[in-house]
Length: 168
Image 1: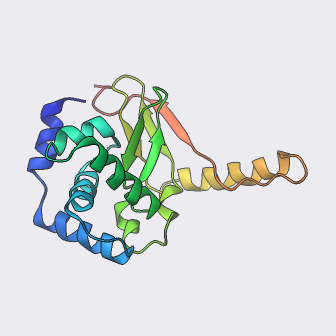
Image 2: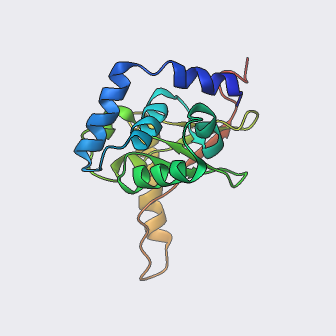
């Protein structure tokens, strides 16, 4: 991902984005700090999951450790989630922002992802799409195939292909 794109995300953060981020932190009963607020704002303004390095490029005023702590706090509170890429780099996203404000902790983690095989960007897929029912069917089928005593609680569904930008 290009640094100029990340810097423009940080520059384009809207006042309503800041208000939404603050509201989400308060509703999750997480102490509002400048670092958490800034990180959540960047994640809300982005349409794909970002790595720690990409977020650090957007928020150069934050040191590396503070950023990791803010990301850990947001994921623990269910306001963001961590996606492990094929390259073993964690990427962070808020998932479905429409649900995040009203959803109980952890709910927004239950959705599918799309990973572009060319640019490596990861996109969260909206749960309202048919992918949600596919996940439910897979989960039910998996439960019947598991050995006695095993119980699944989640399926990480990642669809791989080419994003709209790369398929042009």
